[in-house]
Image (cartoon, rainbow over all chains, first blue to last red):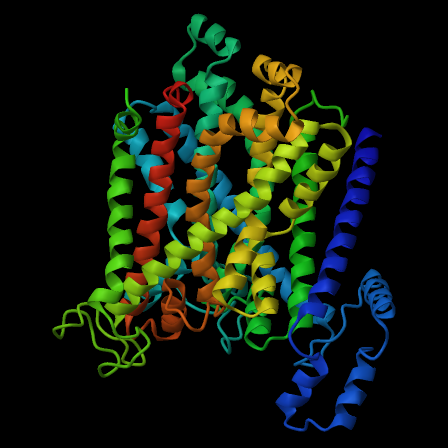
Length: 325
Length: 277
């Protein structure tokens, strides 16, 4: 029951945030340079006034501002994000076609970064004053400072161009006609480079978070008790320290996971991964503002979904919290 | 112990400071060593590094000098990092101070506003803002500032909340100082050290953001930047690795140096806290 109420509260909050983003989007459209109709006609090379007026009417651009806002908001409420100015296809359809690839990429990267980050962080916490612990933290700092798109490019250079181990571009081998298990394997091969390069930056964050959290948890009284009982250090680290250190990590990981959608824009651009990040890059290149804002809305929605999920996981993991807030 | 001695106790911070000074030197020397515009075509394209005098890092797809681009790019990165962080501080510090000092309804409203900005994915918002305002140094600075002020507001708010009931604040109130005087003269000076540490890390993040934006083609078309150089070389990575390799190393070193300096500042400004970590 508590969970049901909690979910309803969170969804209510999510709807308000999304509504505000829709209004922000509408304001941004107004700020966009030039009349979208003019941009479209300019590209087509036929900029006569009549054609422009026709286009304006088609997109509702001849109506007063408040009518446009109402049309825009009520449209989005019914999942109508308008048309891509360039492609003439509904924005919603374009995004839906690309969403699964992004979910696969960010989901995999999230798991890789979280698991490896927690392992590296606990190793660093157990070796606080030793050189090996410092090396882990130095590496984490380097990964944290490395531009995502650059790691992606360099990994293409090393693993695809020189070593020829992994494919550099795309989602699957075009024209190979794989089906079933062979197809899964093929997609997995294409996934390795984008997912690991995207994961590196977040792994660095999770490593630092885990270490701090573990060191905090190690100061607690129950750890002293466990040590006084004569338990082995390894067991204390795993059962007493790590378990309690995990809770703050879950919360922070959820907040960071939202930024992964942003990182995906860069990795998908480099690897021609057919997700919404690559779509955003394409929209950017063609100054397709409507598509751009649609993707922006969806990336924010993804962040909210991610946050609600972590919130629920957190409450499941920690029975002390009873959905009070 | 003096401030610098505490800073220098952190070896990493010293290394970071040296790297940072070298990059600042690069930015200052760029117009002296390479007085010509880094956009000018000066040699045949795709010249590999070390193959010809005067072109230690080779030339790019258009025959432009990579070394010149790298030096001029240092200027842009540092400038955008510093200015956008300053603008973010100008937004975040007042908001956080007001929310933390007054509390209650004002605090609630301002914090909801801050949370809203924190929910929106930073990078996606920055892309949309620059695309719509048209790429220029000003729009990039504004976009980066608009996505990076929330942590400042939260930090300043937390500091103000813990300080507003201290005795010296109560005393200032008792002698009849106005709220604005108390905020600016009494509390704000005591929150400066965590703000300085956060700001140094924000400059690093801003430089990463700027390079990511210009990588995607959203850089100012009139200034040479590291991100642009990598973005322009993306499709020719097989033929010319050096075009994307060197600018990337430059970004990595700058961001790393700023993070190390930030940690050193943290040690120097908050000596009690940092020793335990």
